[in-house]
Length: 426
Ligand code: S3P
Image (cartoon, rainbow, N blue to C red; front, side):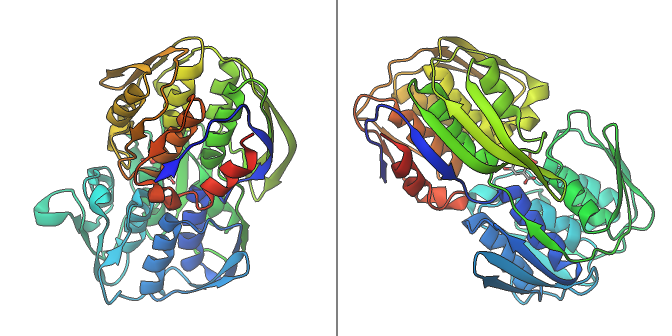
């Protein structure tokens, strides 16, 4: 149980743990690279530990060394059949991406996950991977995990993503590393491109041009990978400070890949005062410091084309929309219904308990602000890490403390969240 305290502002300097998406990809790609690779700034959260657990079972030697992780890559063809069912835990990224690799191995295996992951749709990867020649299916012939994958020889495809999903795109690209012939993935609204960037830096034959990614069967060469702070974790503090007048917060070394920075643009549209400083580039990933000063924000409109670049930030955006003057409308976000929880329904239920005027749309939310947040309320996290952290921030705006049940799920993406929060609340 997390209990919030009443505060007057947010102030200080912080860093946030490593980017989750990049950490997963670093473990996967280094595991199938040639040579020894090191990951600096790896996110030691439950989701990424699950990816490590899966690759250890596939025969990869992975050690924690100081602040980093060292991986002895086995090359594209060096994985071995696991002795047990692989377990992705709560992590959709682990399950969807690893299937692209497993589809091409010389063995069969099964991968499962927790109750939440077992409810999440896998047809989005099963369809394109089958087109590539893969043999995978869900439990009792459905598209739900556990998934059983029989390794096959794959062929390249030309695939237009029907939903803007980086997990689907990445699963196809990982399969494409093994496929005969070229693999093309076409995107209408670009989703996060960490896989493409990392593949290029490890030597894959990949080209990206005007929404089309082309990849040819490639061996990868291990390298050191430096992981920036996760903008999706920074977002909880960025939004809280931006919406609380009198606040002043610096967040150092945050990943600023343009396919992830929608939150900064939307906060700007809401009137937030955010500056980006000390910009640099870590192997193709933009990184910088965020400096934010708090003020009264105003409502905004978020439509479909923006959703992929801030998909994980919608819970926290809904929270600060409640504190902003006027109406915020979010549409084209039906993907939120199939995340770790049904985030649209969960936000309506829990923010409603705090007295926020919030309306559910089939594909989004309408929020009227500014709300007078109620204190003394107990809220449900639905076992969803981003819901728990978004609600914890909502509680900071209440006149008395708010309790978040089942807050241990925060460790799925942000171990140390409570400690960082304690440091900056005044
Ligand atoms: C992720 C992609 C997004 C995001 C998830 C991480 C990734 O999911 O919501 O938290 O690392 O590729 P979708 O690909 O389903 O949009």
